[in-house]
Image (cartoon, rainbow, N blue to C red; front, side, top):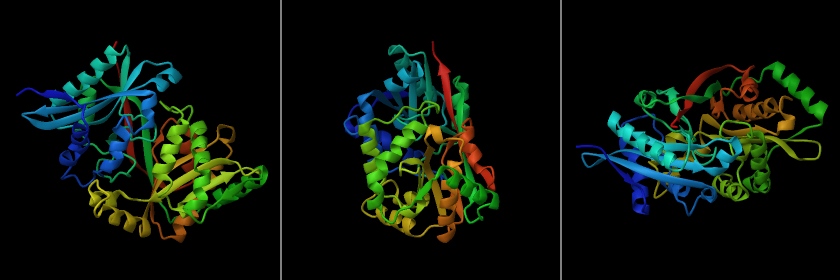
Length: 374
């Protein structure tokens, strides 16, 4: 039987779209399921503020009457305006190892792009940089962080056979989190703090952090401005992400660096790894999924670095080194033995160089692909 595509229109269909990977990866020990409630928030046009400037379409592929693949197409008008491009993004892409299934899904997103007058397609990307992005191309035997997606190795073959080429790579490093802070790093950090009259802001409670959460995401907007595909978060999106994420963070694993006036100029947010907890939760907070998450937050030997950034005018002044060293101290105090960096563009030399004095190994590599269609 030929492959049949169905456009996702109803909320019931959207739940099927979200749940498809749970079957595809049910026997894969490296896949970390997302929270179904969170996926609904992201993909539903009435819940995600990104739909104020984005259009989206979702498709499910069926073969012999059974779900065989899925894909989202996203037209981000603000991104195209900023970067002077005419591209459609694709994301939430999963499929069985069947070339006809993947071909039909990509044909759907490419044809939609043509209908909208676009010249190309690229992804995997989300609505914003806060969504999962990048196809796994190295590290298939590594457990990813919850902020990243997993895929089977055959995905790479399908992408390339369909004419998609590398646009950018994100890389993640694995560190021994208990390694001492290099003397050279400590010495240089002291000099930087003294030279610029900087201060490190640490917090005792989430209540202390929340009043400054918006300020942190505004730093992110400025810090990421020149990174591939990035579009600044709107005020509504900042409120959305503050509510979604900052209520659950652990203050001891967060560090802000401020100038002499107290203005935040750089930040780093990390969290105990929730990957194994999310596997146990199986995509649901209730009735018992939250128990696994709470346990992981209380007792863990692995930390995930989620977000960090420095204002452009303070970049290349060693601010990254200050907050990474401060967090390193917290990891040692709390018996954290493993740290996994957040995905960083391989072309982002400023961010990558922050790790030059630490012992590390490449953990995972993800890739954004693109294809010209006209």
